[in-house]
Structures are given as C-alpha cells and as structure tokens.
Amino acid sequence: MDFKNEIKSYFDEVIKTINNISLEDINILMNVLVSVCKESRNIYIMGNGGSGSTASHYVCDFNKGISQNKKNKFKFICLNENIPSMLAIANDLSYSDIFVEQLKPYFKEGDVVFGISGSGNSINVINAIEYANSNGGISVSITGYDGGKLKKISKYNVNVPVDDMQITEDLHLVFDHLMMKILCSIDL
Image (cartoon, rainbow, N blue to C red; front, side, top):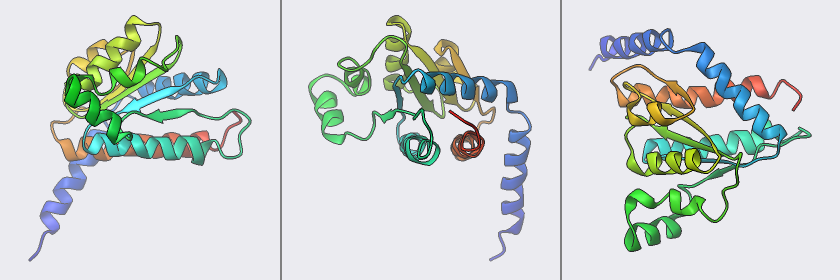
C-alpha cells in the first residue's frame, strides 16, 4: 500500500498549524515557568489520556532534563500519576474532582496549576484551574481546537488552533521539547 499522499497531507497540516501558533503566548508561558522556578514554587500539571502522558513527559523533561545542573530547579508534580488516589477520589466523590482534591492538601498561593486539554473542556482540569484562580494560584494551560473553557479561564494559555486531536497532542509535546531545548541553555 502507498500512504505517501496521506503522510504528506498530515505533515502539511502540522506545518500549517505551527505557523498559526502564537510565539508571544509561548514566550509568556516560558517566562512564567522560569519565574516560578526561581521562586522555588510548585507546578502542578495534569491531563487526561494522551494529555496525561504529555503531562508526565513535562515532569521528566523539566525536573531532570532542564534542572539537572541548574542552581534553581523546576518542581513539577504530575496529578495524573497517582492512580490509587485518582481512583479513590473518582469512586468516592467524582471523576471531575480527581485533580482538584489532590491539590487541596499541598497547593500554596503563588503555585502554578498547569492544565493540558486538547478540547479545552475537560471538567476535571477546569476544576483544578478554577481552584488555582480562587486561591491565589497562577493558572496556565495548553489547548487545541478553539481552546474551550480552559482557554477562557486560564490566566495564561497557548492554543494549538486546529480541529484535530492528534496534531494538537503532537504540538503540545513539541512545546515541551522546545522549552526544554531553550531553557537548558540558560542560567536559572
């Protein structure tokens, strides 16, 4: 079978989408994360499905990759990695509370709550972002499609303006690697 036309079409859509992403929004996000790192504050990150996998990847790249030989270190904490806590909260309360309930014991004013959602409408991510907004936190998100509710309520947002979940998730991971590559080269 010959899939070259479909492959080229996918790559063309990725390139077109990249050209429509706000460089200013990425720059702002990077500056927020660097500022929080220098203040030794926590960054709580989360997502569902593929976005959960991306959240875990950010933790690895920021906590180890960028921070390894730096004076100031990133303190990312992934809320979708504690499966027993998530299951207990989902069972006893609601799946929509799996992230916000994990924040409550640890979150401090000035910490970042970082939501990843392709649609921008994941209620459990929205609840955690609203908690940050109501408790002196810094809310950031990366989204796809039109950004959904998450884009509207986050203080800082980087949106991948495409109606395609796979390309959205691809580029959310590209943001991670882009930031890692740049931040590894500066003093923190």
